[in-house]
Image 1: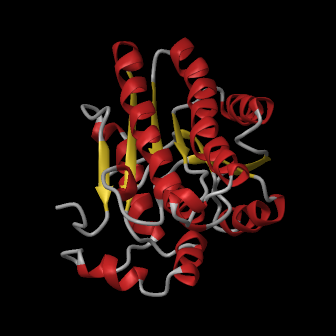
Image 2: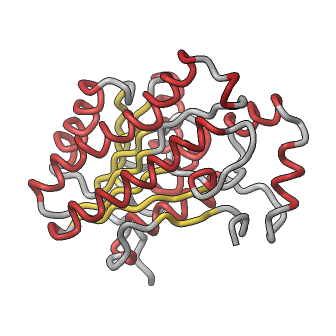
Length: 252
């Protein structure tokens, strides 16, 4: 019988309350992980945690904001306190942004950068603090197909995902010699609140994107989560610094 991908692994899942993160909580739990779920919404976290506990999964919840260094440190420390180590982390918190570059306000620019770039860096910094001391661990960051290409109306968002790719690859170089792997998943259009907001702003956007995809369909959070679970698992033991497309062939 094949062992579960994440059997007995202590995993911190940041951005677990909605969308890809919520599906990742289900996938990771089914794959045997012991989970700490983190996000800003305590009510949403409690809901998914209760669902998983009812299926006899081991789950804890931490409420916090990735733009707060103190909150991120607490997420990591509470994972170690609960399970004694940090085997893996999925950094999935992020914001979308729609608007032509010359129309984006400074406030909106700063907000998206704070969550998608600074927040990612803070997560990496605190997770690596523990993993470097342990001498092992695996991290997966959520990037986007937008980190590999450009398109009109998503410039600031896409800039943040290019930054996520850079952080991922640099962290892989910095920490590979210590036995720590750092990778990213790069979803294309995936059913989520973020995609719904983009569709509301540009109803024709999805038709254009689907036309460019060989598989011709919108992805699901579970499909992205399955890719992340593999990257976190020992079966991806020789993979680091990768940005794995999970986008129906959109960039093929």
